[in-house]
Amino acid sequence: MRSSQLDVDQPLIFKSRANGYSFGLYDTTWVLDKNITVQLRELHRYLSPDTLAGCLHVLAFYASNLSSSHTKNVIERLQHMLRFTEAETINETALINYRASLTASTEWYLGVIRGFLRRWNKLGYSGVSEDVIRLLDGWRIKGNRKGDAVKRKHPTQGPLTDIELTAFNEGAVSAYEKDLISLSELAIALCTSNTGRRPIQISQLRVMDVLCGKNNKDEPFYILNVPRGKQGDGFRTQFKPFAITQELWAIAMAQAKSSINLFEKSLDCKLDEVERQQIPLFPDLRVMHSIVSRQQFRELVNGDKLQIASAAVTDTIQFVAGAAGVKSERTGEQLFLSSRRFRYTTATRAAREGFGELVIAELLDHSDTQNAGVYVKNIPEHVERLDEAVGFQLAPYAQAFAGVLVDSEKDAVRGNDPTSRLRTEEGTGIGNCGEYGFCGANVPIPCYTCVHFQPWLDGPHEEVYQDLIKERERIKNLTGDIQVASILDRSIIAVADVIQRCKLRRAELDKQEEDSNG
Image (tube, rainbow, N blue to C red; front, side):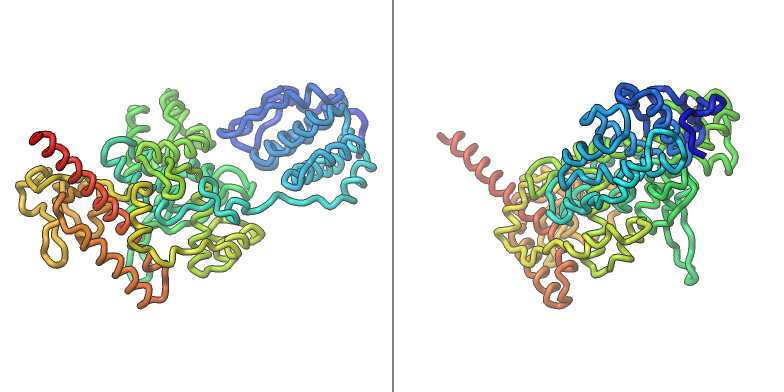
């Protein structure tokens, strides 16, 4: 039953849908969950008391029953409208004026507001008249533009190229080996880049989500059981398994063991297996160190307060790219990264392999296919022919070569160890490996992108380069699949980089000799 006045016995303290969070109805700041805090000052500033009361009660309904991100979006859109219209009430004039101010790319703002006002009217709080609803029902409002960065193949917002993606993954591992990033930062970076999951999903992972099993052939398989992020069913209520490589599983397992050790050390006790499985894969260390008892741990683990904030995932990705010095071959600048770009990349690569909208929607954990079509319709062109000129042009930007050029074998780390010597298939020496551990790579081609590789100044790198160009062409002709052939591209560019460095070093040595003789 509709009423013009709110009941005096209605509660003024509401609980957010996320466990452990509550807010006062008339507070100007609502903390909805670990990641989302909203400001409502402009609602209080513009709306009349009666309209404000109805608006806040409907928003409290959203916060208590729907996702925090959706509630935040509604509040932001409402306040955007109020800043423009300065309306004290929600009426037809304010809505008409606001619609006139929107562009084709922002008209979807009004679509969000329309859904909220319909709910407001349906719940029976005063402030939204039937005339307003009739006006809104008569409008056709364009939705949010889908996949614009994908369509335009944007170099800093759209999907990554294969070279950029490989550079990030290899760069992250190299940065960890150099002790430039932590195990946690490595795991966050690779879990995001390999799965294309949203930051909120990565932040909600727990030890129990890192799984290993065996199929009916007794072969091992590796899984991340990822919490679903946008289905609106609350914190860790739905999951979708994502197949991962053994290498990523090993990194995630190492991070899981590290998190368990951190908690047990902080609590100064051994946790049982059930408690260990509930530990966040990526814990909020500040909150963890504030725990004073095992009972408090058990209470906090029921909600999201022990998990890192989703914003920390995004910050970590960019930090890792900077620490690794990863650059884009398209811009020549440090690679700008976000989890969204990895999602675009995951879907684009799937479309390129011929998968349809249903598979791509499943891969991205979408509930429908309305956003998947953009990938199928906008498959990036391949580099059909990576010739000598193109390889040398890309080399300074891609930074695929990660090792150190040495003048001769005696200048190399382990140069006095014959087992460190690397040779071409013809048996000619090209450099040394500075790593003491075992390496199962099919040398020497992968060596050019390895941080431990020390190519010699007088090595036959030009011959290696020409052989790779020919092999790429042979594979393309044999398979008819440029995607298979392009696997060699990063190695080709790395060899080109070494060749260019050798030319510069020879010029430097020649000048030194001239100076000493002159």
